Image (tube, rainbow, N blue to C red; front, side, top):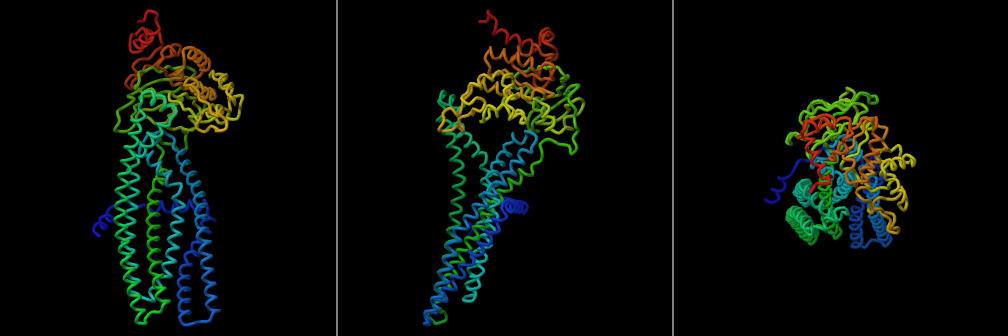
Length: 612
């Protein structure tokens, strides 16, 4: 009992009534008809044990007193009907629950990813706690709403059954009724405490299970397979995965052992009460105070009530745990935007003057160092600005700020004099074409991979192919077994058609990313972040020529480590340790013999014939 008291005293924050109400409303809206049918069948099913107990008692008592055959046949038919209804309801309830699960799970998934897509910035997606919460929200959101409703109905059904049999038990023995009821109180308290601890453990183990998932996916990843086999690190990663699994198992095992001890103690208590009651009933029957039917009723009532109370407690505890997990779903839905969006954002006209970065400072959190420190940069309308810098200088971070995935910690970025914080991020991004350094390879068809750059052109084959031509990938895609409709992945390929899934080279994927940007060619502002990486010398020259033509007259920020690709930019800005340290055209910067000149000279030396 001391152990039980310790468990009951422990726990984590209780679930909110709001989460319970939200889950219930979601399930009702998703499947009101299923909820209503399930409620009706549950109430009927829960009444059957009461009817069966009374009919059994009546049958035994009529047999003892020698009642007529017609009466006994009528009671037998009634018992058979009860059995038939029990058999039908035992299959109907799981079916109705499954249908409600499907309806509520679909609605919950819809709401969850609507909330995820509503987040305008990147901060949440680079936050491990948010990713753990999202994983639990995916787990809970798909089943908690229906579990709350079915759990509530199961509790209602249990109360119907227990309430009816409690009345019967009270007639036979008020003291025994009180004893059976009292035995459920510590069980309920212990189960709720265990549910709270289980929900807390799942949250605590989030990072561990996420790492385990990372290692398992890495070992099955086609891109990683080459290095894993070349370096012989499969066993190492396998060991890491098992270590994380063992750490999680140890935590769950500790919880399961605690639950085993408590459940055993509670089971022993219930058995002692039932045994004592049975001895009492037999004793009373021997002295003529109870009939055979009364003894049957007593045994049935005690067993059914104890089983019903155990089930009731289990449903309460499980529903409690699900609501706690649903808190994560609620948290995702309630997540505040990580960048501020005005209620009445300013509608910006097409870019006509330029973009100004004014004294911009940025760091990801207060605990992180400054990435940008007082950056000033002008990107004039219709001009190309080349951004140069060593790794870690802040180039990619500045690109994120220009796309307004983050807002500056200090300073401002303006679009024709309007602060980006005054503009709806979606409208701003609709004006921008980007090739990111870490571009995506989508497990979709070639047409879809390019068409994602502008959904309005997704079904416009002429525009898709034109973008492919501009990026120099059209011939490669057209030569695929299904042309632009070829699936560029083996993940979802058709087992009956070996040509359904195609693997591309890194350079080909680079060109597809460029084609996505080309599809957005009429945008006001073009950002090209390392657009030539992954290309051979011939392809690099071809793409450089195409991009130079494409960006002519467009407002462009061109970021590259290959400084030769930046020579024809109108102006160059050199970013170092979060600051613009040099600014000018190629000739001016070479004459200054600063960082740019040193980097350019070092790169150029590798192409000179006398380099050893």
